[in-house]
Image (cartoon, rainbow, N blue to C red):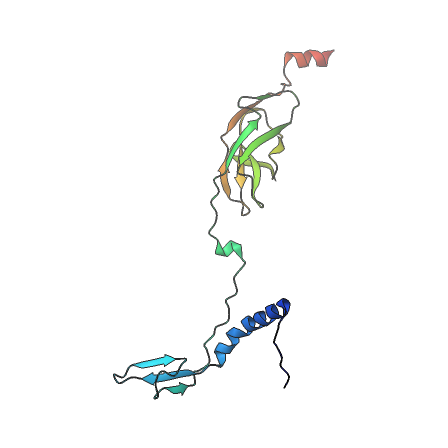
Length: 189
């Protein structure tokens, strides 16, 4: 008889060990379960035969449930975030006067935190929404009537609800009167 010595190279040994590790969990499904009852009537289940009276038991299929799919609708799953916006008018400053034919003014505001998508800014002239809604902190407001006006800026959400408003500033609009002596003198010359 020929004598063989089983020598495995290192890579072959690693493959063999890896294969055994992969197959090990599947062997537990093939094992039998035994049920035994002791002299006091206590029932014991085991994967080994604990006494001569232990009997092999066929277990029912495992009860499984399908996985619950997560909902990705973040609007419904999250409570409405309450952002505490702060908005302030940087320019024009309180008490500014508009002269002559100046019909439009540039408004610069500071907004903290930054506006979320779908939110916008809108000027409020004398307590009423005025002009176009914008997302920029720099915009133009115009068409003022002669006299004293209050200007503030509101942050409005996607549903049109005013979330917050800046403190109001006062602006004065002075237009030359058609009855001014300077105008009459200029018209006569």
